[in-house]
Length: 207
Image (cartoon, rainbow, N blue to C red):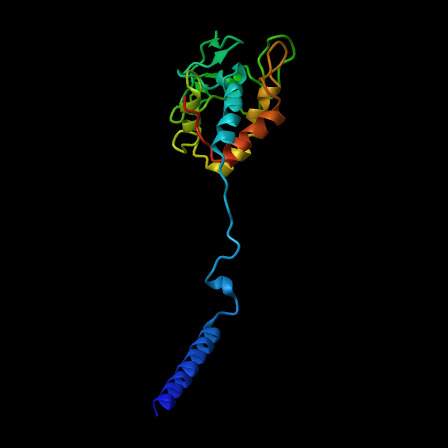
């Protein structure tokens, strides 16, 4: 009798186990990925590569071709030694000059022919008074942080920053007119390092 009860119990347990397995199989979704992310997107950020790239970018941004239009004060800089503009134009609210002394009075749509004559661009200006975007005197750490802050970089998110590498005003730095030095990298090299910095996390150097 005891043997029969044991066998009966074993049979009941077996059928219960089969029922549970069958129920679990029935409830399993056809598309397992509804519950399990079987192919997650992995974002890799490389702080070493990012900082190394920005150190090269920084050399370009601190060259006269960039820093001269990003001064601490309201008078632009000029020359290879980045001295105050001899005509002493002022930034103005919109960055295009003050009163009748507008940037475009001298800076035409193209470079003026001749040695050390005014370089040109269709929209020559300094950053506006409420968003000065100062490069002059900034350390690599300070400038990297500033460039990633929309309240200090012209309201640019990371996608706009990437596109900014091909901005017409940025490109003008590699076409400065006769008698002026070029940035320490070619534009292609600069863009590569710029994107490497951004794509790897936009890390700021320690100093």
